[in-house]
Length: 45
Image (cartoon, rainbow, N blue to C red):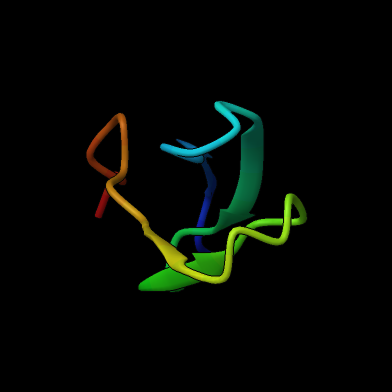
């Protein structure tokens, strides 16, 4: 099971919680670009 990670939209600075397997996520602010998901903590093996 992959832990959820928090990513922040560079445009509206809203925090989004996404699955750790997700590489990109589209923010709800409608900026029209995807936010790159960078895990804050390394998932445990």
